[in-house]
Length: 242
Image (cartoon, rainbow, N blue to C red; front, side, top):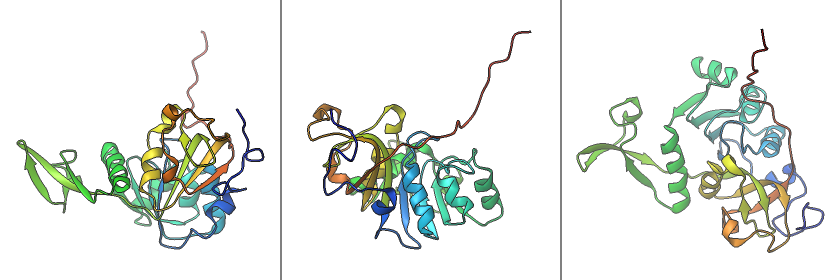
């Protein structure tokens, strides 16, 4: 199996993350990002966005990373206007900006966020769900009963750009994700008008078994390779004897 962007070429393959985002970024845009906790984050693409200085971004992502890692780097640099997220507990600056009304946050139940992304990729404008009915999540949203259960209407997410992290890609952009990185990445990829995939390895055509393609290349417009060391999100040490 061939690997490495130097060995496999194609029109979708870019030489760096900076080149991959070129011409796609603008102030006020909406970006959908894959990742769950620190797993499956497109770190190099996030750094390219930081370097570009794009401002007033709305991010749809399960979480905001850490204070100095992932989307947290953009939040700390005041490039993010709004987060559509399920979890903020690991990022102190995220929390501080939110409590100070410096950052708008739309809290979304995790399953609802996943389905909003999936619906955006499937061309479904909105859907009803019982999740959040009867809570603050339902405020201002249309309601209806189905089978005796109260449901609320949730709108799909369609982003200007999707950035995702995959394990392997072929030159056509067919992607294979590794373990839990498969959680939000395929959904985020589908809801972007343009999708950039940051991958660890590019294999030759036919290098991915068709049964192992987790996301078809039709959803992916650009590919870049790179591996970035990530911190441990929550370090837990076993206590010593005695």
